[in-house]
Image (cartoon, rainbow, N blue to C red):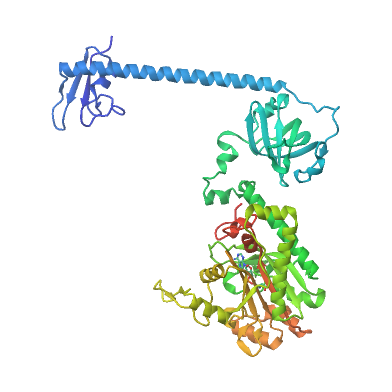
Length: 563
Ligand code: 4AD
């Protein structure tokens, strides 16, 4: 028999979740008091209706109602317990069924049939000529679906996608029942053309007769699609770049990048430029001290290179016209969609040329490389996938002098931010730098590649050659592309030793560490010029990417050097 007990109910400030019926922590309802402590006397229920009032014993009518409500609570709890028990039972049954299925599946052991013809090992890209033969393919599970006990999987090996069909015993193994996306697999079977009316990558599918999982990827919370999906934010995607790059778009951009580098090399070699590999660790600046990454080099100051230009210039008398495809580093704190802290820099340098010939060469490099990409079915398909509206640019590219560009900006009402901190805008004037925003609006309006040339000397690097007879301006050019802006920066270089020494002095550069660059003018100088092309920017234009960050394998920008 329950002990006699008094419980407190405060109809205003009690709590049925945290209360225990004591005077300090009363219940909110008499029904819960009854449900918790039993329905019959010796329970005394004291009730308070308002703050400051005394607790009084519950009235008979209130008690009657509370008894009824307590029974309701009892019923609800019972029902909930029954449902929970049924769920647990169902789950246990499902688990048992699954375990039984898996243990049955473990007994299905596939062995490669030695009677069948020898399978030819192949990358997916090379499968077309192997139709109707037995082939062996290894790759990662890109997609999968099950239909009427037939397992359809699309496998990816970096060279392409292949649909594989698993049915009968082949789809009943432990590996088949536990297969997850991104697992690596080995598949063997006959490659057949897909039946009429159906589509599959390459127009064929693999009818699998033997296969196995090589490395299972996790399911559940750790599953690939829980890590990377449409809802992943930019920070997550940056941290998981190694997984993001398995996606169809990222992998297409990276593959196109490889084709682009090959096309550039082919074009440059065709035009008799020789590839060199200058150092990244340097002790001279090229593009101004503000964007240098400084480091301690065995106790001496050194930098990560901003540009290999000065080294390329020294190669001219040795091996002739040269190019390099090398990482360059810029320490500017720029978070725009076209800035990276480390980028791939294609630079070329040519001797005995004129400024017009330099611009012709840059135009040729881009147009002939694009032609190579469009003539190759693999790269053409990638361009089509990423940038369906892409059309090769018409030649010749528009050429607009800096002076005319300032006039054009004024005519089109494109202003620049005022420097007085007012947040207002002012018209462009001679001597102004044409900043990124104005430059982009200009290219977007013009809609075709455009060379801006002849920039004022004070806006440009110390080494640039002055325009003969118009010495305030330089033989310099930027190539602007629609959607991206500046893709190439180039110039003719000072060829006179004394003029160069004066330029060092004007820029406050100590000439001593540049002795080797100055020697270039001392030992048989020549007229020469060159350029630097941002590979990620060109790729952003070609593949219609919003940001250069999507055009680099592992992009670096201020604060980001992981993975
Ligand atoms: O115009 P820039 O600074 O020119 C030079 O470095 C010259 N020394 C090159 C030369 O004449 N050999 O850079 C050349 C190109 C730019 O047009 C741009 O495409 C790219 O390099 N670039 C960048 N790309 C991504 N992120 C950055 N922070 C970049 N800075 C320059």
